[in-house]
Length: 81
Length: 384
Image (cartoon, rainbow over all chains, first blue to last red; front, side):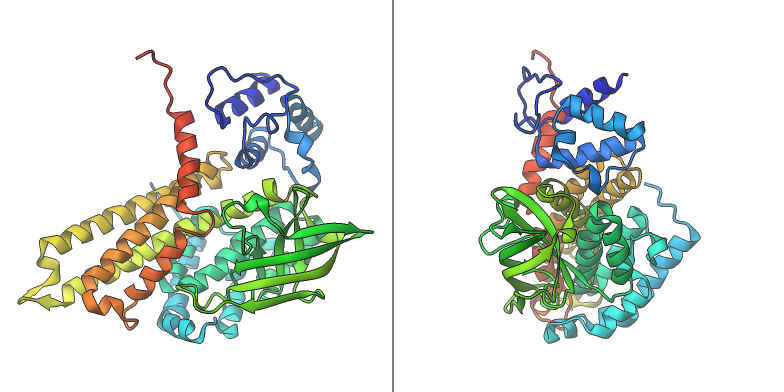
């Protein structure tokens, strides 16, 4: 599966809203939409570290890095490059 | 679940068991009476590497994997909750946060000193008016040149009265940030909180911060990332430790209950022969085994870096703290009047168990988290 698809799947599986019709675009801020909570953020970090064998560290803690599918994709690409 | 420990891991568990039997368990009531853990006990723990139980070996730690750390926590918790509390706070809350989100300089400065017991860490989140709603902390920080000025009050901070530094959470217009704040900073004062139900030797304190100046280099993580990343990391590690603490109290109470029921006679028969007593023992055995299984599953997932570890840790913490309360209540009941007397350890277990249902996220918060997970995970889209 392509990178964006993996990220989107992970977000959809872990969204903290329960509306079957909830949709979000790749550039939507999933935190501002209220689709995920703060515990998700830590889970996302764990997912990224395990799935892509990278370490998310102090310098990476820019909130925008994890706010949209596009930003997460860009972040992972920058780390594995 | 098959727990296969290496020879080295098995040795560590045997060593900590012997240490607890020699240095901790016989003195647990004394620690409470003194309302303090002896300094020499803390130094003995440091000398054995216990204050760096999970920290990397390159910093002097034991580098225990999550499962071995859980078993290690269980051994200490069976002896004394206050001593176990030091490990929870120093290693799981303060230490793990620094290891995960600290700069290289912060890690290399603090972690070796924490291992050696030269610096004791505490985690300062809760406030007089802010508990579960941790994102709403009222302690403030403002930027002043290259420094930050912190003002506010923290309450119920375990080991706050002896800690050398605090991972302290403050807010600026909703931007929550974690700072490493050293005790010697001007304007920082701590005072012990007396009159506690439990944790009497955990040096629980209130902290006052009046214009405490810290340099930018003391930010842990990034500005504004304090709640989402630092607090959640701390609480996740803390919950794992508390889950095993629940198992430790449950196991200790079960052993006390069984032993008493085999020694005590009423109406000419041992207590263990009565069916109502057997019912309590059966429930205690089953619940203790179930809680340990949840902890081991969470530990295995943590070991593998699995994202599901976070929710499984919540499940383990919720269940283990709940059954620790159930079993310690029953252990007191089996002991009758003796169970209400501090010459019998079940009296202490009973009080300590209540704390586990409150700290690192109350049972009610865990229920909300677990319910949310269940509502998502176990939804099937069948028409009927």
